[in-house]
Length: 544
Image (cartoon, rainbow, N blue to C red; front, side, top):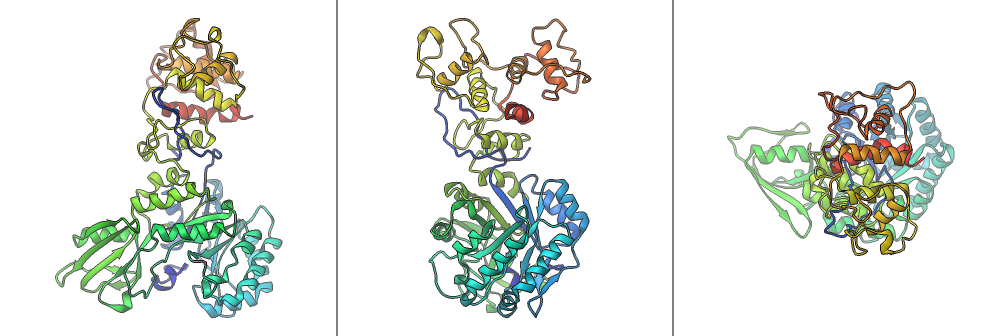
């Protein structure tokens, strides 16, 4: 990534998401894209900060990331592999324990000559990379050679093909490629044969940033929305959407009166600090969908340094990224059904990024889930298509679950889809054929999942209680109290209660919990968030 050349090398080189929840009974279902419980793929580069901080950097992202790509490999002056002494087996082991792959990136630090030597040396280089991956228990390689002449296009593809042939299919081979919004056929941007590279790699990491660059005399956005979208559109003329990972920038660039500083990079964290320190002003540029800040450093102001360089006095213009601009970019992942995202780089983002990142990248824009405890459970249910939103931007996690919603969730989770005949004799007076959940309620009834409160009434808007949901799930999952496992004894669930057996079965299976005071509160309502959590626990049984 071009930012590295000017920023300088530092130090050597629940689960949120997508909530497809059920709608309220007054509105029709919000249409959303559902893929899998895992949702979109997300990776991030690790470049800034001490390697000792890498684990903490990754932990800030929660369960968002599938792959982390640390700065472990680069090319030396002769085009051979140079392995960083910052590789830490403890970090790699920790990532593996947390279900994340460690795929280091190999860089030529934007040096044309070194990059070309590495490509010319590809037979030896490939063997060096394979040996290093195996020796360090790594999970593949992300190739990030930049600024080579376009005549190296085929040679670079051959390098990637050799890597793919040498490494097991379980190991990742990915390629960082320059954005090419205009389809340029010259300059280093044209050195990437998208189509050929995609055929011999797992995915292309589309570096859809550095629209403005170090040394650029004109202040402008790092990644305007039109620039990013055109870059995606061109890529899609060459490769399928499931081979494209969209690069997301966590940094900005500044301009002042010093031409040597034009387009110098700084983290989004630092931008916020500068705005606060120097009482700057911000505006959101509608055309580029990017924020821009201005501030002045006066002679008497506190000094600030970036990457060891003191900021000079004067007027500054900073183009960067904030929540609004990042969300607009993340929406493109769903719009074009891309494989996922790749962010440059951890330790540059603001703390709030991970409150919404996975939700938005998966195509769910629920503002009320950004900091909710059930983010992960809602995301899983959403990506499976089991729950939908109550509106395009709302999940309503703390709203009580209705009987109509419960019936619909069970039908979706079990994959019931047979046609229901609209026979009034088999229906309910309070669930006409025009009701949004009519078919699901009829399917649930026909399959013995849930019955009405009487022969003629279903009460679709009545809330589901905790004991009712325990009984419903016990019936659907066909669970009973497990031998050798003690069911929790709840003070408010008498042995003779109609729901006691179901609650005991669900409790012994670890599917339901009580409260800290020893109660189950059987008649309390089940919230939509709690339902998502129940589905997460029950998923292995529902999908077996």
